[in-house]
Image 1 (cartoon, rainbow, N blue to C red):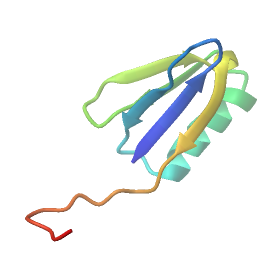
Image 2: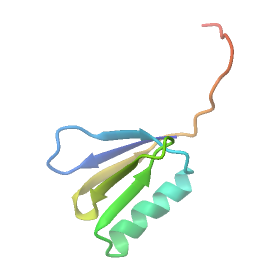
Image 3: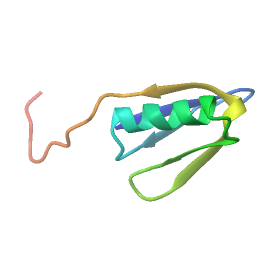
Image 4: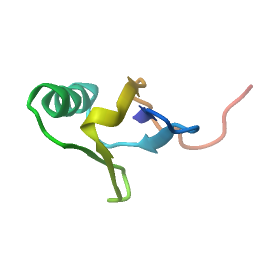
Length: 75
């Protein structure tokens, strides 16, 4: 699923594909903001980690679960 992370005072947003569910991502964001954690960490499908200071989070946009299509499709 696609996750977009907005960071305060940064011109670009961070976009990554995560294998976590929307509920898991939402729980991770809530823990970082409410739990007093200093860092928000999220891993993508390739095992890379994105680490953002929790106090700098502007927004986190959680996309819909995408199903990968196999084969040829018609337009």
